[in-house]
Length: 124
Image 1 (cartoon, helix red, strand yellow):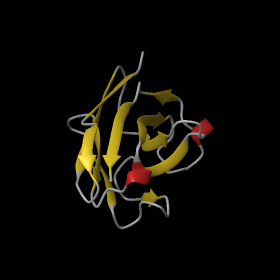
Image 2: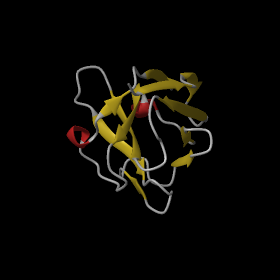
Image 3: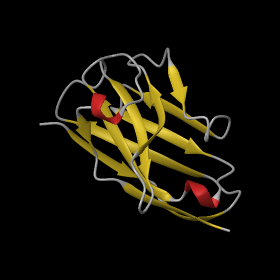
């Protein structure tokens, strides 16, 4: 059974940085695309970033492009989200997701496994 465990969330002031991590276990990590999504109170879950199985392709939501960077370390079964220049509107629960396919996609329903989420709060 696949387990995804996020960490690294917290409270930060606007303009600050956080690095989220997501550790995967339970099956081979290497061949699968990974993504980060977020959900703010009262809003639908939205795509943030995704990386292909070999890090050859990355994709970002327009709202985070240039500020966030997704990366993965297949030797450690871990995917990261470096978040810089944070804004209050980035406040949300951030979820890590794994897709049983190596290619990058943005739709949440395309992802098969999800973590429990980590809270990110950006104060103004």
